[in-house]
Image (tube, rainbow, N blue to C red; front, side, top):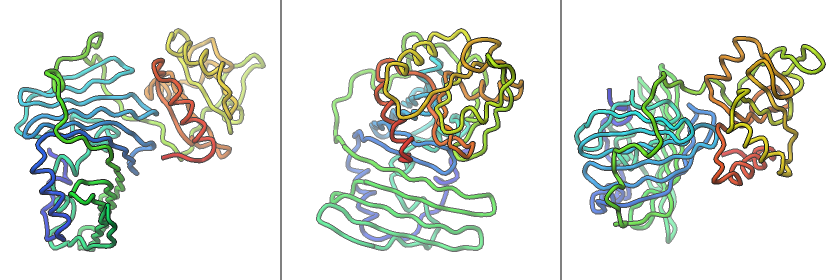
Length: 343
């Protein structure tokens, strides 16, 4: 089943919306940086989208709170691979830039630059909905659309550059099936970039192996209560919920070189928050031997896992894995999250 959003019928729109469609049509090859957030997922992502129409694109996203991943599509096949899990999965070829939504986990699907792939903002609003010019400057134009039907209601905001390129798209929609709110920003366009022979290669990176396990969507959500229960410690059974409030919890497996490297690195940094190490095994860390259900929940999320806990017992932000090549980025994000600045 293709993405429902891409199946919406298009309606009339202002001339500026047509300018975006024309921009996509005349620029058969380009790359752009993306920043995306969604109400369906508890974190924001950033990355790069490169396309060569009509049948090839590559999307690489860095979520910070989950595995980085790339999705490559060309005329002969499709390939998704993750960085931290070092795994990949191949999918059958599909015509053009169509794809099946079952390919993606929820977080990955919500990061897709759907407006750029669809090439027409009119496909995101019901028939009869009009985008109206809201404001205009020398560099950009802002268009607004809103609708209320028997099936759904919603609104969309699009900011376009003077040449029709999409700079910002904010879509909110709700129906009896629920609601979604996706926001994406696009910057640093490069038109007709130099593409190497393997830009859209569906050959897995060296060192990656095929998926050997089911792919799990995130099971811990920012802003929702997280009950950790009683764990063992040097002082005996301890209420970990109280121990981690307002602190940065580091969840690890007992035998994990990645977790060892992460903890060593963070120990050398001047973090604006105290850290607490939680081991999912029967030893290690400041707290260990969690309740079975808690261990399963945290394990499915992936480790090493950083959870910035609020004083209310709810996660404020999360980071999964440790990128030893670019650890400063995570430290900066932690500092911003402690200040309450999360994207």
